[in-house]
Structures are given as C-alpha cells and as structure tokens.
Length: 227
Length: 223
Figure 1 (cartoon, rainbow over the protein chains, first blue to last red):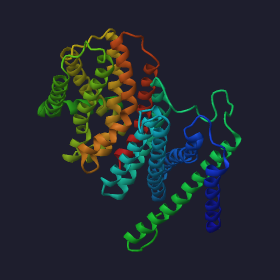
Figure 2: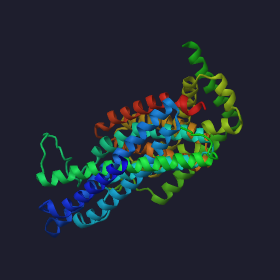
Figure 3: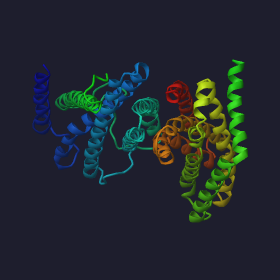
Figure 4: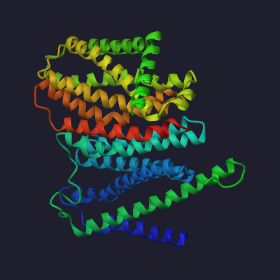
C-alpha cells in the first residue's frame, strides 16, 4: 500500500515538474520573457510545506505534552528537521529569483525576514534538543519550546510584517476581494505542486520517524518498543 | 487564593533577599548594561541630531536592553539548579505561584536596567524624545514581554547544558516580534507621533506570551 502511494507521489511530482516547466504559460512582466517566473512552481510549494511542517511539529509537541508518548516527540523532531530543509530551499529559490527580478539576493523584504526568523527559531529548537542529556527532559523541554513557537509565529508572519512600509511580494493567491487573480493553468500547477510537496513531506516524515524509532530501539539493545 | 499570593510573594522576597546578599545580578547586570551602553555610545558619538538618528537609535536602545536581559535573566532558574534548591522548590511551591514570583523578580530587574540605561543613553547620544509618555509606556509594555518570555526560557535553559549561550539562542527568535514592535513604537515616541497599531499588537504579544507561559510552565518545571 505504502509502495503504491510512493509511486503515485513520484508520478505526481514528475507531472508537476513537467507542468511547471513546459505546460503552464510564462507569467508576463518577468525577465527572460516570463520564463524566470517558473521557479514559482517550486518556491511557493516549498514555502507552504515548511509552514505545514512547523505547524505539524507544534501540534505534535502539544500532543506529546498531554500524552507523554515518545512517538509524538519523534514526529515533532522529524517535522522540524524537514521543515528546516524545505524552509532553506524556499529561501534559496526565493533568493535566486529575487536576484533576477529585484536585482539583489537579499533586500529584507518582510517575508524574507519572517522565514529567516522561523528558520532561526527551529534551528534553536534543535540546539535545545542537543543540549539536554536526559531523554525525558529533552522531549519535554523541546515540546514546550515548539508550542511557544506556535504562539509566537502569528506575530512573526502576520503582524510584524505589516509594520514594514513596503513588500515586494505579491498579494496571497486569494486576495482580499476573495478572487483568484491568476491564469488557471498556473494555478492548477501551483496547487498540484503544493499538494505534492505536502504529501512528499508526510512521506519523508513517516520514514524519518520510523528510522528514529528503530535507532531508539537499537540503543535500548533491541529490548521492547519505546512507543 | 491568599496562600497563592503569599507563595508568589515569598518567592519574590526570597529572590531579592539572596540577591541583596550576593548582589550578583545587580552588579553584573548593571555593569553589563553600563559597559554596553558606553561602548555603543562611544562608537556612535553624539549623533542624536543627525537625520538618521530617529531611525537607528531606537533599535540600538532595544538591542542594548535585550543583551542586558540575556546576561542577567537566566540566573532566575540557573541559580536554583546549581545550588540544588530546585528540588525543594518543586516539592513545596505551586508552579504558577513560583512562575509569578520569579516573573515579578525578573520584572523588577528589567525595570532597574531600563531606568539605568534609557536616560543615560538619551543623554550620551543626545537624542530628543518628543513624546516621553509613549516612550515610558513602550519600555513598560516591552519590558514586561521581555521578562515573561525570558522567565519561561530560563526555566528550560536551567535544565540543559551550555546555559548562557543557549539562553540567547532560544530567546532571540521568540523576542524578535517584540523587538520589531517596540522599536517601531520607540521611533514614534522619538518623532512625537501618536502611538500606532503597534501598541495594540505589543499588548497582544504580551498577553499571548503570558497565557502560553502560564500553560507551559508546569510542564517545563516539573519532570
């Protein structure tokens, strides 16, 4: 079953890549006749997936604090690691695109600021984990910190950027009028890409979690499951 | 309820008593704030009248306050773990009362740093503040958020290795929204503008962090 799902995912992502590079029309007004805009099909889904990953980590941590079952903590840790990966890739693709469109790799656009701080926060989460010896204490403190992240994130993503006087980023896909202001083919690829990358994230999360569980069991000398 | 207040007050009084006996935080924290302040002002010179000053100096002021807090506030719980009095506290004190007592101690420390640093900074860089009332309000509201987040993070750090460095690493990303809003408000105070939407947002941040801290603290404190 899982193999079949993995194959469907593989095909799906392949279709998104082909759709983004060949099928969707180029966006007018971007350099190279709009061809440079094709990076959006990777940039936006990766930023979205990083967001999903950090929310997943926060929720799993809250559940861990309630139930104290180690598998929720493994989910949170793996989600943070993957979120950092997707977040770093979103930042990197965004930075390359910014160099093409806006002329510099980095210009402290509010959203660039938010994502860098989110990455710093979750890097600090991993630093906290590595600084605690005792397993139970490590899980407990890390979970608390991740939940604190859920509380602070809205300020980082929605409130603080509004204090900036400008943003080069466009409006969200669904703008304030509630209309979708985009070519249908581009929208289809973007949504398919976001869905595909989210599924990819949950697949990687499952793998990472199982690896962590197995390593944990082996560390205990193969004696019983810890979950 | 009255025993809860008595507990929090006892924690607060105990912390101040041991502080006044050693004067560790007051000496190091006060000197740290003063040294940073002098170094920064010396490097900048009296630039208060330059056109860039209203944009730059509020950020500098808040960074000095942030670093001073980072230098002093981990002591709140690190001292308890180092002297092995944390176990006694775990056995006797109600977690929420303990948190509030510690928070009150942290608040008085932050207030002391702000009272020491801000007037000196304004004098040394010769910056004129057009609405001092807004500045005081910003320092109070921002200082409260600073103290609350620091108290919670100090609880976590006290149980880990590499406490002082880790404290800054953990605290800064949490405090960045506060820093952005407080700097925006301080700029408005310097320019003499009315307080913008940032004031409401800063209050909202304080409220969110307070609620999160009260909910998380028992789990962070008790093994």
